[in-house]
Length: 471
Picture (cartoon, rainbow, N blue to C red):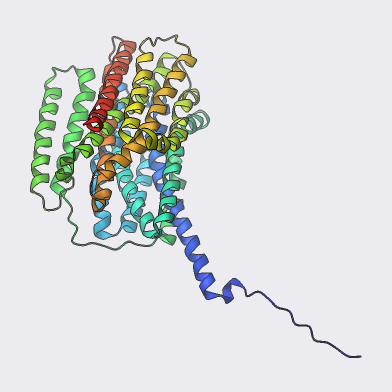
């Protein structure tokens, strides 16, 4: 009996092909780097909105008034706004991975401190540190993404995923926070950051590659101190002015100090070899106008979120979860409108799209001037959708317009300035509108004033960008 030998052709295993194995590991590493960066940016955006649904619960638990609640929100955004430019420079100097991980650790530890806070003072201090961590996370997560994806097309997709994840976190914040508060209590909205932070830290340590260090990059420490102090004094004066009175010596001293510190900041930035905020950027008129629009829009948008959080819970008596549901349409419309904004911009131009978006939001504010304690939610919700839709329409072209107004080599610092001005607007909006609505005489009168001011600011933003486009 003859025997035949059978030969089988086999496919080499992945481990038998070093090039394929290395490529697979590189793809996995970059994907998990993207996951870590998205967690970092996402948790920052989550904490921008999640706290608003907890305001009434925090106030009841810690016996805090409206001024204390304003500080709980504003302390976070003050740290965020004032430190974000320096955080980017710090990443350039000693490496974005090292700084990003430090920021994640600070943010996570501060979140735990918020959850354990025995009183409003400790909570406010922890929120300020949390904002500092947030400021570190955002620019350095983007730097690490750029390093992980050297190909421009792949980098564009990665940044799109990074931004979309943050938008989803921003949208889900009120509803997610309301659910957590209903099930566990307000402290849980901060404790949820602990597992997110630990996962993000491990992924960053394991998979992210360090960026090239630039030891010659200087840190503008005097400018940083002046910026934080000026913004803190201004916000503090506005917040306390609502309860102490605008003629109170403490309030007046705060306003004077903020002006003096702001002047010192400008002098420092002009003298510094490597300023935190290059004032030369504002010589570009479109850049200056776009930055102004970003500030005005955030004053209106985030100031109104604070006011309506109190309206839904203290006036309408809604639970935190119901408050999250009430905000859902307003927040959910932002992302889909973001996606169509580019097409609208291609047809009518970016400045016109920004003006239309701001105008729509202003119309929503004006339509709510008849707001009363017994106003139907459907009437309120419809206008909140218009306000959110206007915001969603204007933000993408606003960003592209600002970046197009400067040289490509300065696009990173330009984006940082836009982020800083928008966060500054958030601080001022919560401080101003909270002071108006927090007066003991009438919450509703303060809410109406906040809506009118918002409409005026949004129309001013539309006029500013439209005027430049027509010039």
